[in-house]
Amino acid sequence: MALALPDRHFGEWAPTTYADIAAAVTERRGAGRTLVLVDGSSGSGKTTFALTLADALPGAGVVHTDDIAWNLHPIDWTDELMSGVVRPWMDGVQVDYRPPGWITHGRPGSVTTTATDVLIIEGVGAGRHELVPWACLVVWVQTPHAIARERVLTRDIGIDGDTRDEVAAFFENWAAAEVPFYLAERPWDRADLVVDGSSDAPDGAIRVVWR
Image 1: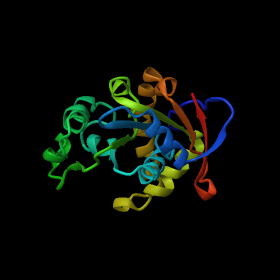
Image 2: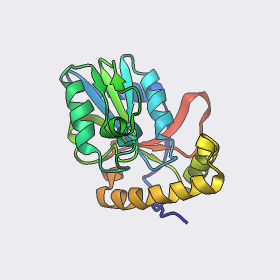
Image 3: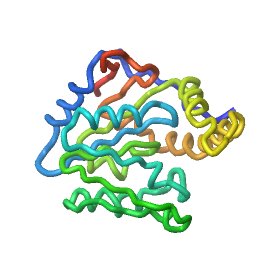
Image 4: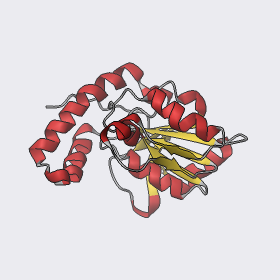
């Protein structure tokens, strides 16, 4: 069985919408470009949250940390993300970045963003302490381990022909890096917004705790 983070209680959930969260981002923004960080364990629903929030924010784009970490390291990629994406984008440069793993293993294409106003970085470890000073909003997506694990198994079965057992083994290997990192970093403690990722609420409504 994979290592797992303990489920946490952050207070009473309150209903909100992506439009309301987008309005809060706009209100928090200063001059210049705005960074939003969306963190959460594997299968928590952070990618869905980030992409839906981007749709509610004109001029927003999304970068996935999985693309930076691809064939590099599941957790240790801060320097690559900062030098290849965050600093250039904050300086007004259009990002067109090939991470080291892409170069080494011949993956075509690059990590790009044409976002002019808001960049959302989502993925395991996005809320790490090195990135937080650059962000106007840090989000933690909280989902019970059993739900997150089943999502990953359902999502990834059949990709590259992988069976359920193979995906489960990959999930456990990933958790071996993810869980100790989270227990050391505790990104939920620095989150401005905690999102309930346990269900897909109707009509764009979601449950959150503002902190």
